[in-house]
Structure formats: structure tokens, C-alpha cells
Image (cartoon, rainbow, N blue to C red; front, side):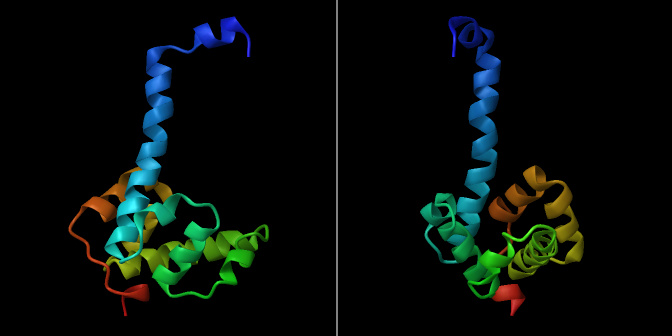
Length: 121
């Protein structure tokens, strides 16, 4: 990086660079804690997915299915729906999680929803 590039980044851009990851990390941290899992598990690559699969009640090999192009889209939508149901929400909330995640994940994490078990069982 040269000096001109560093000078082009202003305080507003630095603030945005710091806030966006927090909007992603904090809700998942609190969702894991609501489910009785350690919050730090949400920031560890691959392990966080394994814990998420445990929260929604799916087997570990779904992690491998998430790595297959196009197949992963189906399983991610399915897993998101199971996440919504695990916290007592319905399919309409799943739609919000899929299309407006920066709004709906904090609502799920910081709102009054409770973890009801894998897929709401």
C-alpha cells in the first residue's frame, strides 16, 4: 500500500469498516449464547458452522454439502429456516433472515425470542 492509498481512507470509511463486522459478529454471538453454546464459537471458522448445525439439529456432514456449488444454496436456505424455527419464528421471519439479514439477525438475537430446541422441537 502506498501513502496516497492510506490518505484516501477517511475516518468515516474506517468507522464503516469497523461497524459492519460488528453487525455480523454480535448477533451470531448472542444467538449461540441463547442456544447454550459458547459465544466465541461463532467467530471460529468451520467450528462455528458445526455448532450452528448442532443448534438446528442437523448432522456434521451438512458442512460438506455447504461446499458444493448450487447444492449449498438449497441447504443454506433450509438451514436458515431451521434457525428461524429453532428460535420460535415462522417462515415469514426466514424470508427476512434471507433478504434483510442485517436487520433480522439482530432482531432474532436481541429480541424476546427464546431458543426452543433444534427446529423448534
